[in-house]
Length: 207
Length: 207
DNA sequence: TAGATTGTTAATCGATTAACAATC
DNA sequence: TAGATTGTTAATCGATTAACAATC
Image (cartoon, rainbow over all chains, first blue to last red; front, side, top):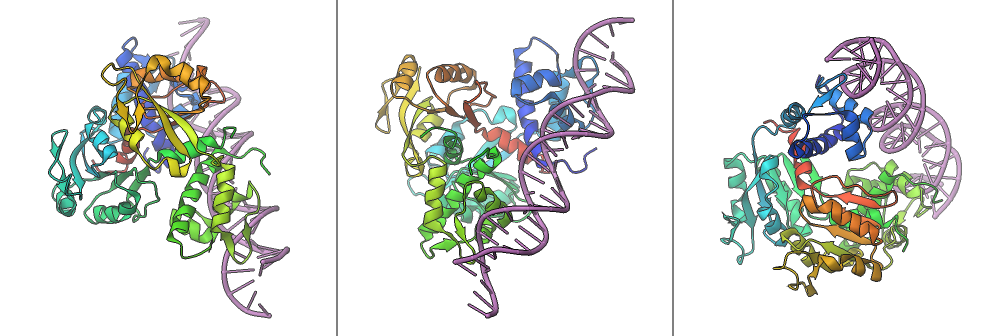
């Protein structure tokens, strides 16, 4: 059942989950089909069925997938049974926006600690959290067994932060710093850089 | 030379460009190699050479790539010769953070207009820009021939905004709203949703 | 010259799609 | 029953990698 699922398949599961939640909130039917999901997401129905088949048999011939049931299955597969506590490093304007974002909790994550090293920021309160000095990083991560961190620092600070996070037991990092980060095998890093996204699209535009 | 380059290749060019800039700023050598670039980025040297070969011959046997020259070539390929003006929709905390972000301009983009529909926000000044009412969206986009927009609105507003943007001539959209958006062929949409990224990584974590 | 590195070819690897028997 | 849709197989399609002649 769970042999070695391609990363690219895992990456689509949260998209399926998000669309299923939307259908659930719409609240006008109990079931959906690979065809309907695919239509909404611009993905082929065959791909959706194939992706799901890596994990089990969740549908019924003739009727499709029970929305609530498939949501529960995906939540289990993605380890979203409880809310993951997250540490945020960087209390600039992006870090602050993330700290106030109310979309994390209902989808399985919660920023619980914020770090910065600017004297003008340490001690400030952001969304009921007090900004911690960077010196506290290692102790806080390891004492609280935090697995996930978000980096919203300037690029020049990010690699050192990653090293310190990994040294303290962090296993997954979402980085908003615009550079490639290096980490040992088994540490998951994911990137969000608006400029690389815009540059990818500007290729297709007439200049 | 430029036949039909796979999207996945285009997506790597901004990453190469970003690393080349880093090498340029380091300033201690004039050339690099596919091997060195690959080492830094966790990409095979063969892939880098193959990707670049879609667009021409930029290197020299024995010495590799002249950093400044390759940067210029990539800038041309990606249409980064001038700064693209960008419209931002949504002046919440994320929109505000994006409006203040100083990393756009040096890499080819500049947010020049901000829209929102909240009476408390319209008319406010954010980074020297006055927040425009949403009614002005269509006229501003078409009169200024804006090609690129960034959406930082709540999910429920995003699809209608996309429709209006596309109707006014927008060709590329970067969306921070956590849902799939539909647009006609030829319109490029790129997504940034921190939660789908975190969910992808939580699959690999022990819960 | 000897060593290094490109651009390219062919082979390999992996992902997507089409098609359909099974069955609700 | 007839229609719909699954899960799966095999075929197709596309991307990555290994290898090397060319040459700086």
